[in-house]
Image 1 (cartoon, rainbow, N blue to C red):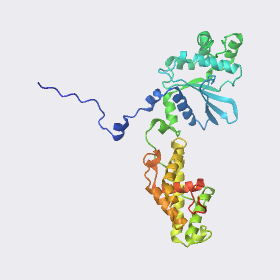
Image 2: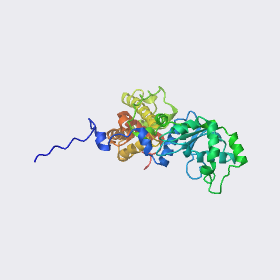
Image 3: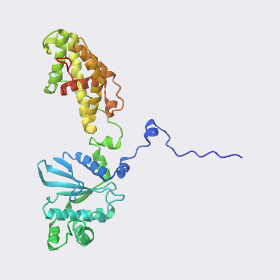
Image 4: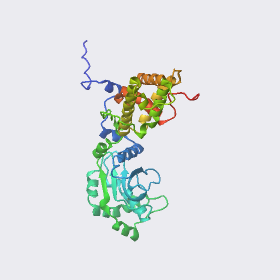
Length: 362
């Protein structure tokens, strides 16, 4: 008896290492649908970072006791009176009017009793956006207000607080009539994702690889205030090497080796500073400090090793840093040989943990 061969399964024409290791990438528009409620609020807060030119500060107020406010943008660092609200809703379907009545009820109640001022703008933020009916409502404030009156007892009366019903009495109705309903809107998911690209959290959320790194700045002719500490330690190393009590840039002008080393050191420092800026702009806070920590851990034994003078210790440490096997850090694909030496000088610049000349038993 003969058997027919099994059919070939559907598969992509090219199987890259990334795909066979972690599977095909999930598009951002699909990935945000997989977030839980807390992750969604975190994502919206991260997105708020993209609005930093619009707001003085953006805060998350979600959770128990938030009184219907999730992510808030304030115009003034020290004044909460002018604010915009971004109300997070992570539902399986596009938002409908049924999903917003309670939120409107909370807003009316808490602004009426002056827990906070009435917002300038109130936007719903959901991974599937607003459905057709809700989008239409949001363009017609008067119709939405009248519908809220009709839905109050069903969706708001018993649900706004745990301390008792909030009745739609004459005073509440009058207050709602006075409120501006043109402030309500929604943020389309694609706009969220596109603006989130400009934040340091986007690659952490969605992957896609680091962008190209800008060319590092050339050191200015004269050292700047940010270079004082590491250059001071560098001159101590030169003085130790030359058997002098002190050294400065002028005193090594006739020493070709040290002058060349001095120039290279400044180039390395500025290269590492550009990598620090690149990390700050493209990756979450703390990522660059993790890289510095890896380098510091890798050079510690060389720092402890006996050397004839501080300059020889510096050369040995930098050589060790250049040879370190750093393979798992996100920045490794954009890190150069110059950065490795520059990170050592940053560590010397930023703390007392690294000095090339041993003064005490430290």
